Length: 71
Image (cartoon, rainbow, N blue to C red):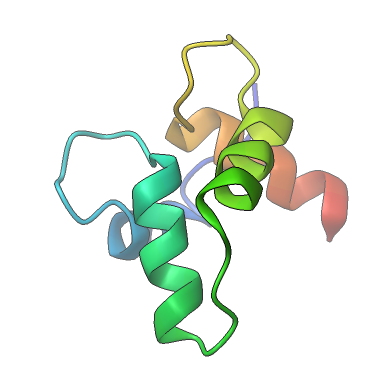
């Protein structure tokens, strides 16, 4: 199990509806604000890459695992 505490604050910023999951729409909004907009398809593909349980959303655990792999 990944240590999620290091990434919880960042995760919470992206999780704009506070449902404890990051959707493709939330990821798309973040990327737009950062000046690197993604198409809906690319945002969905990015979520699918990180989504370990196949529910179409990114949990904090999945986010932390991804961040640890790319760090």
